[in-house]
Length: 118
Image (cartoon, rainbow, N blue to C red; front, side, top):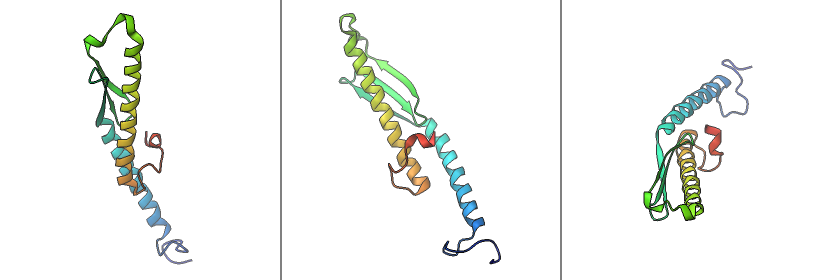
């Protein structure tokens, strides 16, 4: 066996180098995960009557509803608007996580499920 560990078939990279590289990537991903938890995206629907803010940890941090859209006779419309805004905010948060993690991992955006990073 060659000095410094196994070198077969790895393009000259030994096992210790691989382990160090994997540990660095893991640390970088953890740092990015913490950073993303502080970043937010927002979704606005219904012409601006409902706004939802989500962070990179896939948490809803704010919901704003314009008072004039609250109609006791049509609560279903408001519910639909809130659901639509929440889903859009979570989609945007996932997209943000995918983009930022792709920078860390070097993998193409969308190739790894976003929830893997949470």
